[in-house]
Amino acid sequence: MNFTEKIKSEILSKPLKEKHCRKAFIAGLIRGSGVLYEKDGELGLEFKAPDEQTAMALTNSFKLLFDYDIREVSVVEDRTHKKDKFLLSISGNKAVEILTELEVLTEVDGEVAVNLNFYGALTEKECCLRAFIRGLFVSSGLCTLPTENGNSSTGYHLEIYFSSYVTALETSNKLAEYNVITKIVGRRGGYIVYIKSVEEIKDFIAFLPAPVSVLALTELMINREMKNISNRQKNCDLGNVNKQIEASAKQISAIDKIESTIGIESLKKELAEVALARKENPEETLNELAERLSLGKSCLNHRLRKIVAIANEL
Ligand SMILES: [Zn+2]
Image (cartoon, rainbow, N blue to C red; front, side, top):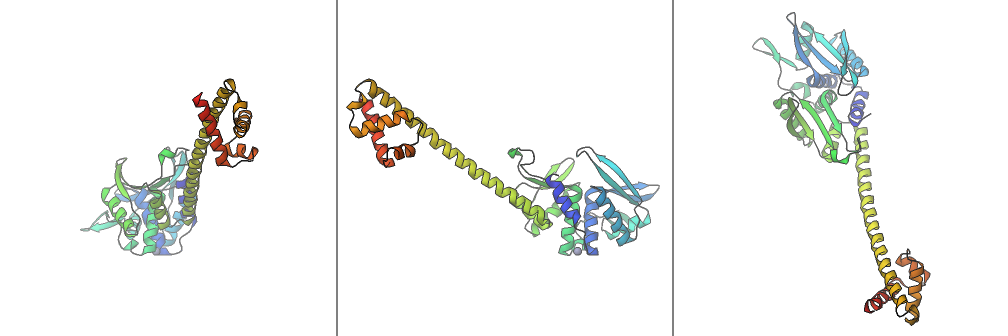
């Protein structure tokens, strides 16, 4: 299950108790995936449910809230996600009534028209606004995280797709009222309200709310941060090791030079002792060598530098 599916399944796993929230959720879902059509002079609407469980929950809601039986449910293949979606359809006078109640349709000069205002009385309560946004996210939202394909350059991304700029802007402004900051850009023939910053993605998911997903995201952020710190630490350690190997090689070549010219025995006793120990243990760190000779690290370092200096004079 990818992260989008995790958020959606968390949203869908929590049935809404209040009727007002249920209505707002369905309105959001319809707004996100609904397509109006006209057949034999009758208005109808098709909308998608992401899985069978949701399709069932929706038919139940329609029965409970509007005493309407959704009879038309068909399976459609979602090619991009390689999984089935469920297409639900409502039509006839009752459908117009329901869609008007859901503020999807409105009457303008005695004519039924699509209501372009997303945020009317139905989303006035905060609980309902959150439910509405959840519906929108379930039907047309997605969220990707950098670890999902192992490529960190893809980064964090969350979006909701809208067919019109006005509704994208309204949604973005509505979210901003709750300190959820989003941007808008044209995509795939419509507009997406999107977020790239992980902190702001977290704010959005917390707004829905989907607390389990917030926790999962927080854990991921912490793990990534820990990994960064540990990588920096490793790079640093490696730098030290390289420096020590370099220094040891320099010391060995100095000792070789002394050996082949004036001889190690011509050095002062304390220097000769260090030179022999270094030559026999070229891979040892300064600490290890100091321990071997029961010397302080700085004293050993001083003697080694003296040996290198003597060799440089030769
Ligand atoms: Zn509510």
